[in-house]
Image (cartoon, rainbow, N blue to C red; front, side, top):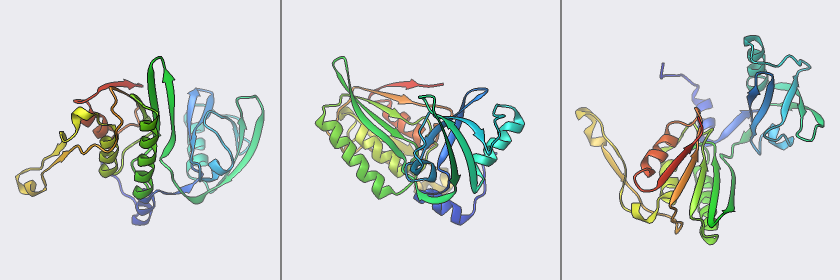
Length: 249
């Protein structure tokens, strides 16, 4: 049950950050209220201007949208497995928009947002990271730029939003951990990887090598049941060195 099969070409696309669909994910806010979870900025949905939180009220003219099995099957096929689908969206201002999406290849961008907020006497940095897959050079460069901004604005607490992050490259999780770790964790053990006696040559101990002057005293991780793998490694590796709060189910 923990195995799956995928075409080599599809895996190459996924692991390098290439999508080939609408670039949109959805969720039910209530049994009769289907919403946009997110839209990849370079995808067909992102280029069409679709925004998180928009309500989907019709799919290919069908307004019977609910959590029944027949409706769920229709939604999954239309959103994730169709080459073209027509949607009617209801925006927060009450207006509607009819948009037909055609699946195309696009470059994914796992860093969805970054910002800084002043809360009481704290400067709180906020980072949304939806995956540890993609163009590693681009992601590493963006990490560097974001944490330089956090340092310039004297960020002392962080919110890391990984609610949709199912994992990916351990190397990227290590890189982010080296930006997040406070001073007291520098050069300490990040994690140990051990194998049985037949493969003990692969045993590894990873140490922190701090990459930013940002020195936080608290990190809030926004999580969900989609938060897994390298995301869990990130949280567990930082736990001995900084106060962590998990926000989510």
